[in-house]
Length: 286
Image (cartoon, rainbow, N blue to C red):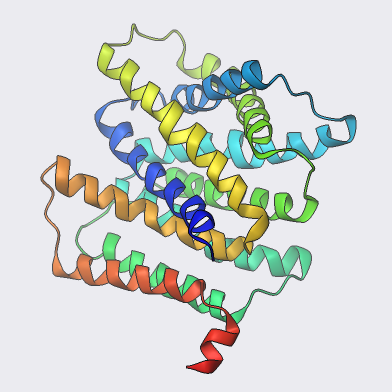
């Protein structure tokens, strides 16, 4: 794997890992649908205005479905679960994505994933379980837990469909239209359940600005640029870096302690990610 491709796969989950801190410390925690709508609609509008790209007629139906799965439904469920679950538990459920992609690829498309990638995904998920579950007692909220799993499954299925359909749309306008359409899908629900909105503070405005540019626009552009060149499960394994980033931010900014068990789990996660990136020929030579 080239350095450029590796960065396209690594940077997005690291930036997404800042979302947990932003959600609990800066943004409107009690308005998850509004946060999802702002995260999608604002950068989507920016890209559409700058690029002025219009999809071909045959692209509209798959584009609408992918936008629903990867943007609208995924973000609505993600922020709902993050607002009602403990951060580690929400992150753990979202990190089931590599395993869900692995299962759905086989069940829906009879697509077999390389055994090395499969072992790496399992090892990485075991490591993230060590990091997130062991140190704390986490209370379950069943609707929020189901929403977190639905967010993971929705993004996973959308990733598989993007890989399978291979729409001939450049990455940047592809991201722009997905964000815009996903934001439009969330908008009526946010207006129905969470409007009117309070006047935001400068801290909240800056938080949403960071979320829009560095938590959404940049990482999704890089993610969709890496997708055509990697196996869907192989790419999804990098999602495990997101909660590790959240843990590091908690340690550095919030004074949260790290246990030995968490450090060992983080090492296991990195081992799983590295294993998932090995080629069969490289394993055979060792």
